[in-house]
Every structure is written in C-alpha cells, then in structure tokens.
Length: 360
Image (cartoon, rainbow, N blue to C red):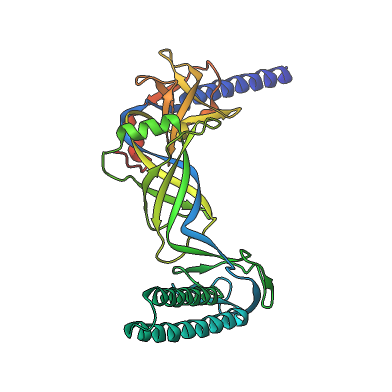
C-alpha cells in the first residue's frame, strides 16, 4: 500500500513539473524582430576590375649597330629627361664624322677660292654654283655623321623609372635591339570595363562637362589615398563581353603605383528609389540570396531576392520584395518554412540607422 501511495505521489509530482515546464516555455516564447525594406534615393558604389598603366611606357632600343660600351644607370633607377643611359661604341661613327668634317673643310676652301675667282670674272657663275653645291653637300654629310654619332648615346626622353636591362655590358647590338623600358609614373591611367546597362546608367545620370571621381582599391585591399577622375570612354563596345572600356587618371606623387599593377575601381553612382535591406536579413542557397517574408498570419516564407548592389551592411534589392513586405531581421536559423512566429515590427529607418550607415 505504501508503495502504491509513493508511486501516485511521484506521478503527481512529475505531472505538476511538466505543466510548469510547459507554462514557462509558453512564457519564454521567442520574439523575433521584423522590418520592411527602406525605399529612398541613395548612392551605390560599384567595383570594376582594373589594369594600371603608366601615362608613358616606352621601349628604348639601339639606334645603331655596335658593342654596348657603357651603362650609366641601374635597373629601377629614376632618371631625368636628357640623362645619358647607354653608350654604344662610337669609334666607327666618330671616324666617319672626322672624315666628313675634313671633306666639308675642303669643300669650303674650294668654294671660297672659286668665289674669289668669280668675283674677278676669272671663272663662270656656273662653276661657282657647282662649288657651292659641293660645299652644301659636304655640310649635309657632316650633319648626318654627327647624327650617327649622337645615336650611339641613348638618353632618357622624359623623367621616368628604368625597368630591367635586356642586354649586358659588352653585348653586340644590332639596330633596333631592345635595351630596356622606361615608365613615367607621375600619373597613372587605370582601365576598367563597364557593362552596357551600367554604362547607360552612368551616361544618363552623369553631369554634363563634369568629370566623375573614382577611387582605387589596391591589391592589398587598401584604398589608394588620391582619388582619380574618369577622363575617357572608348568608342566601341566589345561584342564578346558586352563591355566598354573606361579610363581614369590618378595622380601618383609618391610613386606608389607602378605600370602593370591591378586593382578595383570604385565608382559611386546615384540610385533613385533604391530598395534597401540589411545584409543580415538574407541567407544564401546555391549562390542565390533569400529572405524570410512574414505574412499576415505571422508565418515565415522564404523568397528569393535579386541584389543590385552591395554596400557595407546593406543590400540594394532590384526585385523580389515590395515596400510593404515584412522581412525577418534576426534569428533566421531558428525558424522553419511556414512556421508561425511571435514577432515585433521595427521601422526600417531605425534599423538602418542602428547599422551605423550613411545614405543620401
């Protein structure tokens, strides 16, 4: 009998504990935060893969045949315009110049003597003209010889940075052989490709006669400190990619950027009536973005959205949502499809403001 009483007491105790547990669970029902998309005019930043080029990047080549006699510079060195860089053995050309000088002196003496005789009517004017022509020809050959001697000296055509040498001291050079390359990095041209639709948006919204400012995100994921401006757009679209090339110019006073670097151009564009949602309100399935929409019965249903632009903490959505839709803001992993939830609505302005964002 005692055993039966004890068993009944234990059952009653368990039943009472179960009721309390259910009551507490009901009281502790999770409250989920929901909000709506924020529709307003804003600025979006688009990124484009870019190639960085010097405003002047040229090849320096030998203009005459001969042995490379001297190298006055080093790889990676900054050189000034007119600075002597290479010397090709000039002896042959110097000998030719000396020969031309001698012939020019002889022709000059002959011309002066003939002129003296012509002034005294000893020789005809035709003989004087012939002597004059020989003298002019000798001077022209002397000038040509000096040019050839000058070609044995390779000087910097502008201020710039040397690249690596393609030849070594003592190399036998032929006319046109590549010596090195020279880059003027005082300004940099950055090329990037823009899709057709974004090009049309840019041309439609860009202010006339005003250059668009852009930023450069370097390969180390840091922003280059000096902004650039879009100066030119190529004439034709690439039919294979559907893109058109833009060119932005960046100042490079510290010489940080070099020819051949890569990076990402960041271009800010105005967007009218943009639909903005927090990034944390989305989840991804097979590279597609989804949100949980809360219907009138407070049931959650997943819906795919199309992201038009991404900014810190927010997405700009181009399709999939309406302004009055309620979306789940937090706890996305705690709910299931068609599950009814207890939710609390928060104004989208307040939600976005707490993300620490600034949108115009």
